[in-house]
Length: 300
Image (tube, rainbow, N blue to C red; front, top):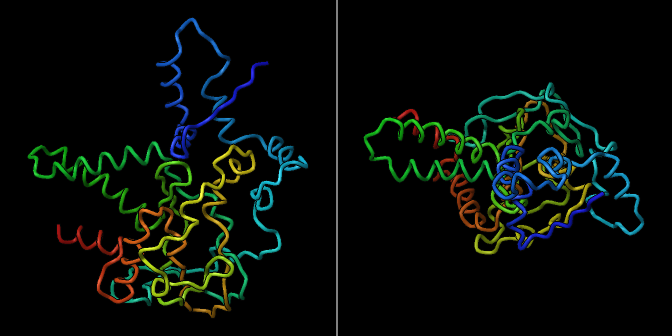
């Protein structure tokens, strides 16, 4: 059997690891002559991206493997989940321009997770697709004065995708280059709790847009956790990006569920702009991404 050793020059190169099957096929065709055969193809690469559970189990049973991700595989069975059926969507209470929000249809005790049964179905835009979307977006924006109809059509179509991923999801560079994740269920409507009023967050969260320094992004945004190959990390990647929040206090029936949007800032380069944006929205002087997009569409 032939073995492979893969080494990346930088954390950014990690994005190529997550190329989709079609991209891998094209690169193999371009780089390997027809007479050559390494016994490696795109389906093989897909198995490295999402290894079998048996590989993950052996990796985590290894006494030499002290990987952090081995301790957070799957959902915590001790955390009680509140299903989507216990939630409703309505006009948010967080201000005139806050748009939609989610509300509790029943009392929710402290320490509960919300919507875990659907969270793994999130929309996940990998780095390669994300870069194509943004390239088209910037191209159409720069050529908006062009009289060709297709320029406007491209801009309207792509700006809707960008607005959706920015307004309802979060961007990160965990996979080497920018990528985005958007919850596929009701949790996409969770609004930010201004001045620390959020009631759904990671354990121990006590910061707010008013207390953090916009000019000093946290060290966690520069972390390369998971940059070395780990079967456990690869298999639980989606979970790592969309789970972990729990209610930090009792929530009464009819009360709006509020998130901590500081948790959704996934790139150090976005920290200052996003924090100042939250400060403006909480002060009522700036629109959120979705409200801004919807207003622009109404005025067009």
